[in-house]
Image (cartoon, rainbow, N blue to C red; front, top):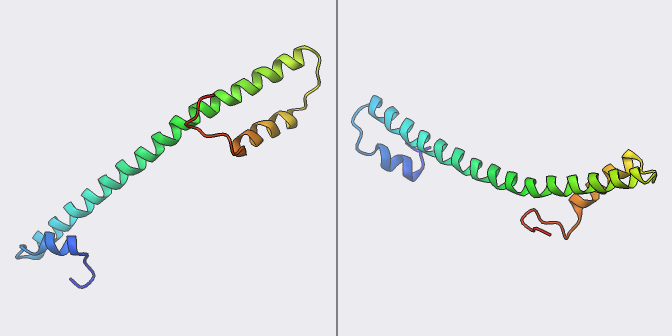
Length: 99
């Protein structure tokens, strides 16, 4: 019991036998695991929402590059990628901002 957190001790304090303690601790850990999963999913979906806007920006860059190439302007693939990457690191770019 020395290595248990306060919440774990509280959960098992009424248990009389080891089997009950194991069951209670399993429930506590499962609850923590479910909460952790939920928190991670929220972070994941938050990032994904931001990525949609970023993907839109990438597509806009690619459209402009395509239009310039159709006008016989030479734009190397590396320059296109560099533009996309620089957009990622632009301090004005925020995934939650629509411009």
